Length: 178
Image (cartoon, rainbow, N blue to C red; front, side, top):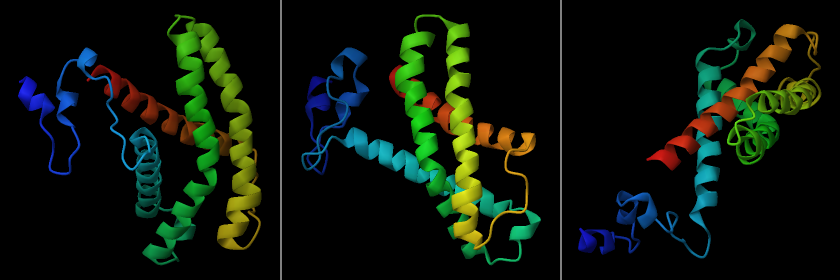
């Protein structure tokens, strides 16, 4: 098995060391062209995430969006996802690299929940502001006619941000356990 782990793939990179035990995996991300592919994995994840959510929004649109052709709806929903991506990035990475190591791993669950709420409240408000004043006017050339801070829309924004956080956390935990 040692020769199998040391064997090189077709493109000259050793990916078979991932099959070894956790202690054998000293460098899970081989360097490609001088760049650490860990960043490429993050970029790929967020690209796939935004494309999937744009597709789901296109496949199940609001009745007011049905007047637009499918490709135009997809393009608009993908742009909307990209406009909201900075909020989701801040929430996700603050959760994964701040809250989890500092509070969850030390078993301060109530404090972690409180800090999660402190994190989500301003980011939800920022997400609503982006929707109301940036995304909607940019995508539809008009200001929205609905109430920006309604409970229903705030809850939607919280769940939208939380879905990015939980999907990322799940994949991070799976990567660490496998």
